[in-house]
Picture 1 (cartoon, rainbow, N blue to C red):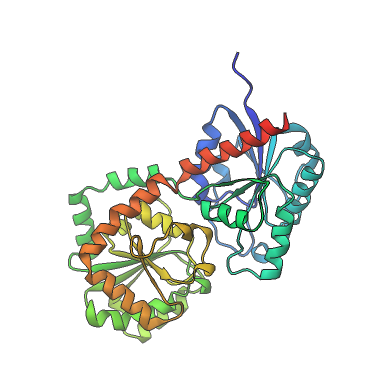
Picture 2 (picture 1 turned 90 degrees about the vertical axis):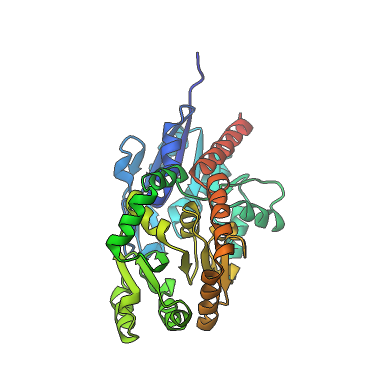
Length: 383
């Protein structure tokens, strides 16, 4: 008789599309019975959510929260969570007060809890980060975003904790399947239909929000076009900055060199944009977009301020997966893009290396495997 699967509760803010590969694997794992508690949206944020895709595994809860989840409370079934699950994994965002209360209470009563948290609060305020780390130290099992974050915590004195870096990534199998749908002939025809036959493409894919600083690329384009006159910058995404960015493009006479593509979420539809581009550019803090680009073998240009970026930046290797520019330096941004585009031999070497990183180190399968490791460890230790 096979043993019963471990009953696992995951407490998170929302179930976003970029986590689909991770949840697909967990929900199919016969050794785990996973239930996710989440809310159906975050006010003020335009996110692609997929909770409806998992009616048997996701339980939506009522909530109250400020705009963009600056502070909030989820009305979780606390007693059920305490009573029914072998291990509870709680997303450790202290601004979600219910998560803080639940995780702390579970730990006080020596229950089965894993803290899922960001080790270093990128762009955060040092005093609040120190408070969060002080709180995190009470937990025995900590699941963070990358191996680099796990090392960061150990260097901060987390010597007794069992820490696992998930190496946050995307569903690389889905990306590889999308790549296979675009053979050389089909991709050439697609490029002809878009008028890209003789163009070099610069790609960006993110919400059009002030934090992404896309105006820097617009300001750098006239300098780049002096050396690379056939360059076209393609921007996938929508957001509150679109009207402002379009006006800036027009004011600089760049309408023929910039394409606003709009939102695309289907991987097969995204694939030709990534496969046809030469370089991915993201001038501000980068996160999962880095791994999305790597999945297609697309080198990345982003700024060199490591403390600004999200944890996924740990996958970036200067000169091997792309190039970095001096933060807020438009001339340097232009220079880095020009040098990268002009050095096609080196660019060609970067492409397969970036895919190795996405296929072997940072993806949904790695995440799910490491998640299973830490929940099993937490369960074994409490028996």
